[in-house]
Length: 247
Image 1: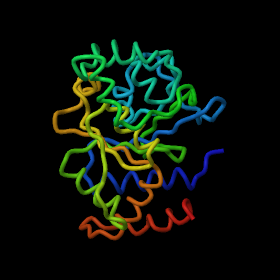
Image 2 (image 1 turned 30 degrees about the vertical axis):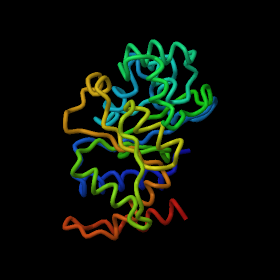
Image 3 (image 1 turned 45 degrees about the vertical axis):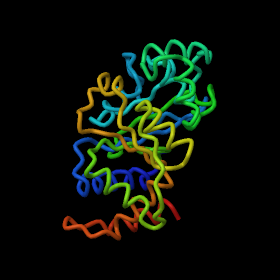
Image 4 (image 1 turned 120 degrees about the horizontal axis):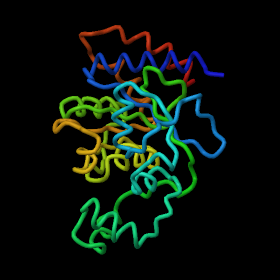
């Protein structure tokens, strides 16, 4: 059974974010599902695409679930914790070294990735739910926002308002890794500047970037938004909804 509290919370938060940060796309709720988990009757796409392309479709209003057979990108399978069947040799030498052109050699590519957070354990998850937050029927593990540098700054400040410190982010990595996998595995907000291949395949504009926010940090963002001045107002109703969902 779908909780009306959850759907009401997601819809209200979506409207708040669109209004305050003047978003051109829906924030996207994403949930990692283990084998046998609920998919909330979401459809499965008929065409194979990369995760970055599916993310843009969800931001434009579509809801669906992904499995390993509809994700066309081997890196996307790896970063999402799906079974990819990739050996490390293939992953570094062919996928990273030649396809994405991360660096000029497999050895440098491997060294380049040594400092990045690791993806979820391979094969741990079997499905990934994508839904515009406005229509989301589940509590997301990660919320991804497509925005520009001006509003990205404001979102980050609001997310860390109560515990301001140096925000660590890794912007130079794959779009799906930077905006979904890293926030999910680290529990912290992360920015993706959208690597060139993702930008082209996903049809992202030059001024767009991605912010991935894990659920605990997203709750902090919404709570802190109530404390910031806004000419648009009418955010106080969110306080009652948040209390019912979080407390």
